Length: 236
Length: 236
DNA sequence: ACTGCAATGCACCAATGGGTGCAGATTGAG
DNA sequence: CTCAATCTGCACCCATTGGTGCATTGCAGT
Image (cartoon, rainbow over all chains, first blue to last red; front, side):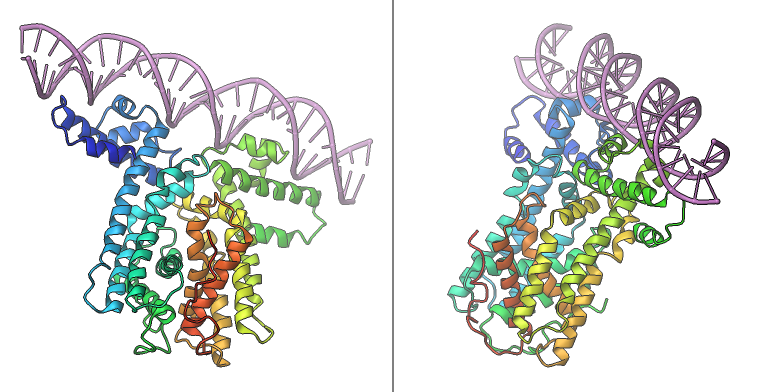
């Protein structure tokens, strides 16, 4: 919330030296996130963050007051990025060009790519790590993480159902399962974010997920290769 | 590995005061895991662990040498527990009593329960948190986490396929997707382990997962309620 | 040139916590 | 009882680090 508000406020260039000030703030936020993710909240020192952001330690305190506030702001900013990227992916399901399977696979690939993104894993690790110490992080990301994405996906699926291209009772449940098929397999493949999943493997996962999804919710009775929906899976 | 080996070595009661020594070690490991999970590795102090394990700080150093080694041993021990519980669940797919759907739902419920377990979340959080600092944790859990479970599940599914009760190209891929359907939806519902998912909701998730799975891989052309495989989902 | 705000560099404080040393208590085996 | 291995309580060292104070510099508007 903090980051978003400030970015919006940046529209007024009249404030004295506002431009430079905002630049500093952004630099601090970006660097702080990287350092927090790399070293962990407790191990990360403000001196290191200050040095890597090319900023005096005092400047950080001027902007954020203390370490915890900085963590929250950095996480919020990064979560905003991630949410935007995910929603952009789902939005491609609007005005698709006729071929439902192709459209779903395209979106699936993009969502998979969002999930495998290095920064996304850094954010995930940070959240898992600090949620016990700072339960309020939940509020910070509740509106920025998977929930709104699944919801947007449900909206798109509902349209397809209405148009008779899909069969489903609850679009929200279907969206949840599609998301699960897309990301669930990647959880293990990414090895806690330490392994970069090659593009080919990402595509295979997306294809297999969409295959299975269409088998369960599609109207087309039996598309090509129906008997083995997961034949397309990656070799390794 | 460390914990398992030691437990096995405990079979020789001839060593002087071996019994008491093992007890101490177990107490330290259990307490260390709890404290690490509760406070995070960096924030957790050996004084607190010693106090809660009712042991002198020196005793911890006698057994494990330093803090990092203690962390690794504690994680290994807990991962062993988790793996055993998961494999026990999957093993129920042996000699099932005829009804495939019921058997899958039973196993699904058990796996879901394993996933939602408080200790499992604690372990997951700890791994996510410290994997960046201690990449070797990957080796420690590689043989204890999802991979062997999915593999065991694939073995069972392959048998069903051979018996003509399921249709699938690659059992491993099918197992991966079933696991994804089971746990993927829970990821969001558990809110990073801060929310306890009620049993009814767990069962609904398992049922929905098995429903979708059977739609994609089942031989029964169209079971009851086929058109809306996810109708059974929980209200909230 | 003057004013005011932000940023800087540097020294400093106080608390925290990993790890060690040591002397004494406990325990089980022979 | 003796012996050896552990376990215990306590004091201690020392490096780290969040946070502060202060004097100085740089920049923008007037």
